[in-house]
Image (tube, rainbow over all chains, first blue to last red):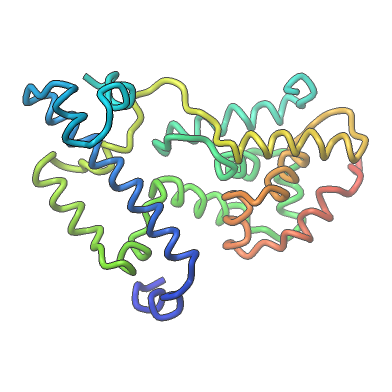
Length: 68
Length: 175
């Protein structure tokens, strides 16, 4: 399916809008994984990472702690 | 519940976990179960074939769907995001295939989604309703069809007739 055909046919379709939201979440999640790993490699503390992400230290450690 | 599963139905649940690992998905949902049922021989595959489903096409489409990790480039384009541009920038900072690597689980346990768990419960309920003593692939398929699930959506997208599938699956076994 071409992008043009899809946006023409489904500009107002909630299904497409929701798929976009889901795609964004997954994309954000993957970017978070990459960015957190890099910050840790560069010597950032969990506290610093948590503050940058706007979440608690516990939350960020629970989610990413195993990777480094 | 699992003690009432046939060997083949248990194998499908195990295969769903392997499919999740291969496709680097974070969870196991009804699409994984559907791929396992459609790919490996058994009552569920027979039902799909009898109801006119192109099983090979279904498995291919479902696998591609899993590998994309739910990231839909067309849907993103619709809100002004160029996935390829994001991919390029990610690779510039994090190296080749960065986005795909980031999807990879660190190993270990991959949980079933509530959708998948519900479909297994529904399979049990279907078996009780049909007065069958064991739960086989057909019941798992019914569980996927009944829940408003990603597996069902995928079947519908592949042009499957859900009512026809249900009718075939509910028919008493010939054997």
